[in-house]
Image (tube, rainbow, N blue to C red; front, side, top):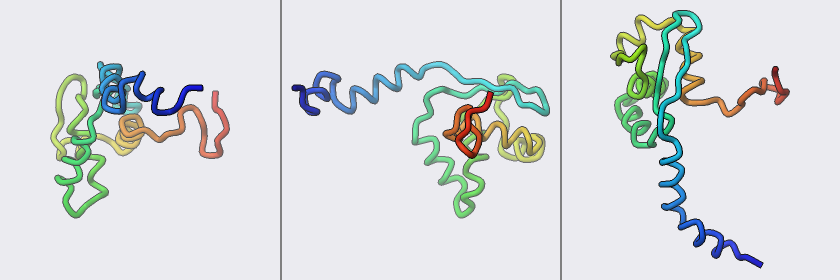
Length: 118
């Protein structure tokens, strides 16, 4: 019978597994904003350090963290937007869509009741 320690060693330990996961997440994700039709791309692998930078930039306004983060990692039709441009020019419906896509809601293809949606 294989022990948990042996299984971890065969896979190379936590650091090796994390490096493998990061390597598998190369490339970009993309979505098209429903209201404006702008194509937005962002890296599949998002290091935690970028989220921490966004939190520091938000200072005492934690609600701003997601907007700051999105502007840090996303390209809009291949271009970067400043935070002010993002806040002033992107409509709310597109912001909500994009935030859900980038940060994820953890409920792929399920509604709030846990029911699969087609």
